Structure formats: structure tokens, C-alpha cells
Length: 220
Image 1 (cartoon, rainbow, N blue to C red):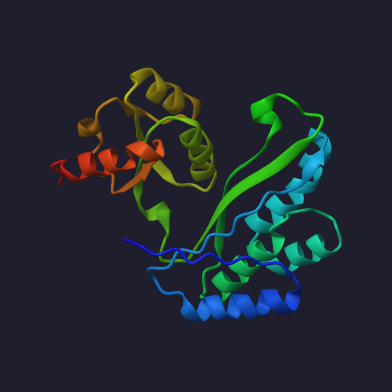
Image 2: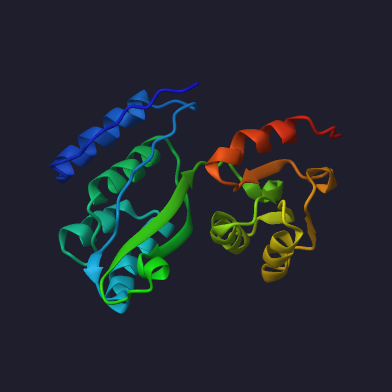
């Protein structure tokens, strides 16, 4: 069980960003997940959007919230929720959470096929030293769009992906082959015993079933 506390930020000035970041850092504990939601650029051509959105990606990837705030204020990039993004990064920094991973960057043209006017999107996570996945062995459960975005991000960051599991063996093989992952299967029972981190990249409606199935596995 969990509770959701929505926060809407109208005035995205530095004063409000700093005040909210400080308060979030004071209230957050190890059980708190903070999500900042925003589009990136709106209604530019695909090439123009890529130029603008790549600035946001660079700042997020480098965990450089001061430069991101400067770039947003000076129109070097765009994000309607840029203030919440900077707030999240500043709050994380106050909690000594200083690592970032960009999972995916795309735009609406990749879905609609219309590249004349697109909306940009990016997904990323911020984490502390305690969440060092390089020490762990990972299984990807599911081989859909999320898996195809998450897997290269994990690989680029040096994480050890041991296997891919999907209900469709052909889908598991496709993902494994694309990113040079040696093990793939359509059965959770074939996950290597040394795997100790599982990413559930299945549709929302299948998360509970996948988690229940994993919990019933007999593992060393």
C-alpha cells in the first residue's frame, strides 16, 4: 500500500524550486519515491526538437541541475515541467543522491510518423551509492518497448544483464541478440541462480502475476 501526494508547480522560479527541494529533502525517507513529470520541447521539427532535448538529456545524465536551470531560463532547452525536474534533482542532491541514468529519449514522431511537429519525451532515474547495480546480476522480465529502452541504458552503464525472459521466446531472443545477452528463455524457471535483481518490464496489468510467479520460484 502507498499514498500519492500530488504537487503542482505554477511559478517555477529559482526561489520556489529551492524552497520545494529543501522541504522534499526534509520529508523524504528511504520509502519515498519522488516523480517529476514533464514533456520536453513542443511542436518543433524532429531535428529542432532533438537539438533542444539533447541539452536536457546531457544535463540530466551529468546530474548538473544548476546548468539545467540556467539553460531552461535562457531558452537553450524547453520543458513545461522543468521546474519540477530541477527540484527533484536538487532534493536528491540534498539527500546525497547524486547518480543519474537516462533510460530513454524519444519524441511523438516515433509513434505517429509525423516528424514536422513533435513533442519530446525523456525518462530517467536518480539513485544513491547504495543502489549500485554493477555489483549485481540482472534479469529482464518482459521484452516489449520498455525492455528495449531500459536494456541499452543498463548496458551502457556497465550493468551485468544475465538473461531475458518473455512469454514469447522469439521476443526474448530478439532482445538478447540485439544487446549480446547470452541467456534467454520463455520460462522464469530458467533464470540463472546467480541473478539477484529483477526488472519487470511487462505491461502494468501483468506486474502482479509476474511478481507472484517470481516469489514462488525455488532459488538458492
